[in-house]
Amino acid sequence: MATKKAGTMCRPRETTPLSSPCLTALLDVFELYEDRNFKLTSVGSDLLGEDQQLQCMVPPYVWFSLFPTNNYTISTDGAVKVHKAEPRDADNHHSFLGATCIPAFQIEDAEVAKRAEFIS
View 1 (spheres, helix red, strand yellow):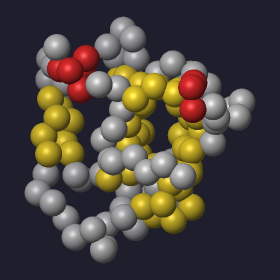
View 2 (cartoon, rainbow, N blue to C red; view 1 turned 180 degrees about the vertical axis):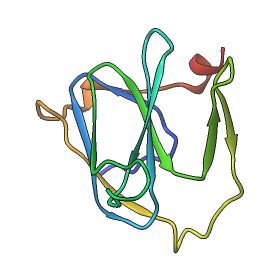
View 3 (tube, helix red, strand yellow; view 1 turned 135 degrees about the vertical axis):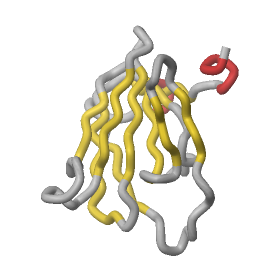
View 4 (cartoon, helix red, strand yellow; view 1 turned 30 degrees about the vertical axis):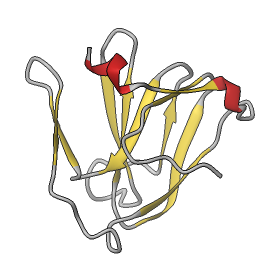
């Protein structure tokens, strides 16, 4: 099983449901659309607390990335700005996440972003 670093952007060719059965840190799913609009969804198990969902569906051909909530702050005042927070204790802030692809995942159907393409 391949492990991806938090914040890596990928774009699958199929619908990707993301769910987390075991969270000690809330996750944010960042979706970036071709028209440069984006969507931020918090995935977590506290349905009565903050604005959280147990799962998130990412449409095909949409770039997405995930990161622990509070590791980054995203502001949208005119332009999207991302600010990285101070590192936290990894032993106490971790998540287990599953991604299921529909139809079945094929490695040739996934694309990992190159940083230079997103900052130009």
